[in-house]
Image 1 (cartoon, one colour):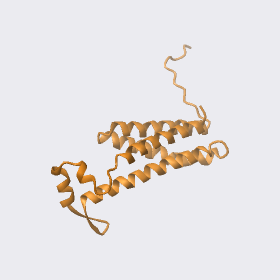
Image 2: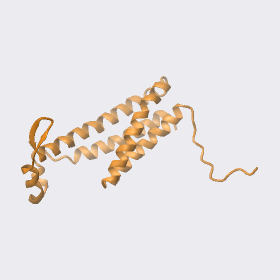
Image 3: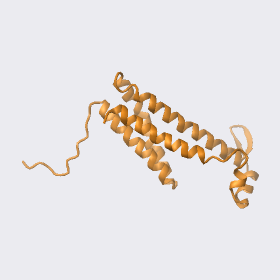
Image 4: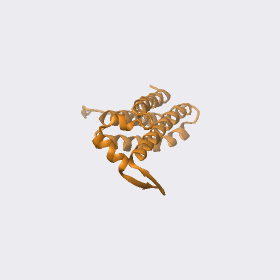
Amino acid sequence: MSSKLLLRLAAFTMFVYYILHFTSIPNKGMLNDTLPDSLSTPMTQLKINYIGRDTDFQIFYESNIYAFSMALALVFILLWMLSDLTEKYKIIAARLLIPFIFFLILLGGEELLYGHSFAGALSLISALLTGIAFFKMRGLSIKINLIPDED
């Protein structure tokens, strides 16, 4: 399997994650309708100061959902664009993949830590595919020999 195909599969995995995350966003102001009163009322009553702006926790929460959706879209787009560089500019593409691998591993770990197992699995699958593409571009192969050779 080529590095280009591996990166496109990783990008597609992140696209699936993006779509699932984006479609779970409630319409603006509709968060109160989707949450029980025992949760939505405290979210609107809790006032916080975030980067010099006074707001309630519900708006803070919704804005973070949108921001994370944009970050997922950016990862998908950049992985797809990097897949086009794998044949002509292998060294540059491989160097650019290193931060993506670390980001996807950390993201997957954080998601698993906080109980988002499906999202964590998608991130870790994408990290694995990106890592394999990285090693293929660098001309390295990973050989796993479960049965040692007899000398």
